Image: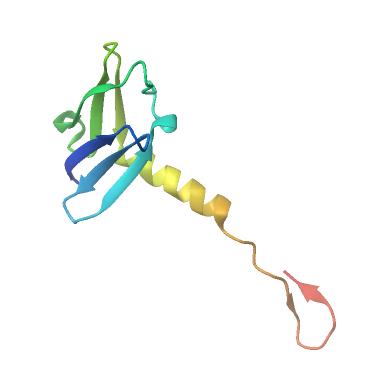
Length: 101
C-alpha cells in the first residue's frame, strides 16, 4: 500500500498518513523514535520514496531524523485490538452441566 500524503498534528500529538486507497492512519508521538516534544517539534515530514512510499520520514528541530512505516501502524493497531478485545463468555455444553471454554 502506497502513501499519498502525511500531516503533523502537534495539538493531537500524532501524525496522519493517507493511503492511495483512501485509508487514513493515525500514529501517536509516544510511539515514535525519536519522539517529538514541545521543545523539539517536527520540522519537516514527508512520504519517503526510499521506503517505497510505504512510510514517512520526519525531521525534528534538533536535526534528529526518524521513520514510521505502515507496518508499525498496523502492528500497533493489531496490538490495541488484541488488548481491547473483550474475552468471550464461557458456554455451557448441551445439558451436561459442565462448562467449556
